[in-house]
Amino acid sequence: MRAATYSRKGLRDENQDRAVARAVEDGWLLAVADGMGGEAGGGLAAELAVAALEDFSPGPDAPAALAEAIRRADRDIHARAEADPSLTRMGTTLTAAWVAGGTVHWAHAGDSRLYIFSQGNLRQLTRDHNYAGELVAAGELSKAEAEHHPMRNVLEQCVGCPAMEPETGSEAVNSGGVLLLCSDGLSAPLGDEGLARELAQGGQPEDLARALVDKALAAGGTDNATVVVAVAE
Picture (spheres, helix red, strand yellow):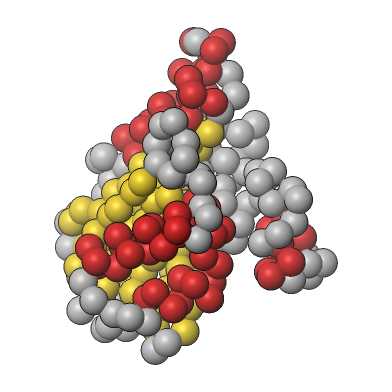
């Protein structure tokens, strides 16, 4: 597998996104965190989230191991906020995946996303844990409608939110398949069609990652935009 990360702060004062792409045991650990909670806490929350993955080991059940890392991040964020009242509302999304043996395993909380692009088709593997995403899951709203829903940024779950239980899953990844993890600063301006169009160009992960972020900001994105691109070989 070949993997790369790229991130820009957009029009924000600070980049509160974090990304991970590194070899772990006989696979690759990939992650994106999108911090929230104002200038004091968003970046710190995202930093604590990726720090909880530092000692990650997949063990016999990789999705469960990833979910436990997210729960550990949640405990760390709550503990830090309890110790410092100025951080009370901080939190972060966290989408984490481990890829090995032709399979991607993931755990996820928030509205950052994990996609798979294979044979010209783009599919979102994670569910958006926001108000609009819950309506999509209930069949009350189409995904296209959710992209423009006025409450699409209201999170139902996040790492550091009052209630959090990671979503987990596993999916086969064929040779040549592309995994894309991103913050909503990337997915919102481009939409699935724009993401698929860029990925269809092919190329090295580094070039794809940079092109995706640059296109998102050129399309009017103002938020931090962060992506991990991984190509299976």
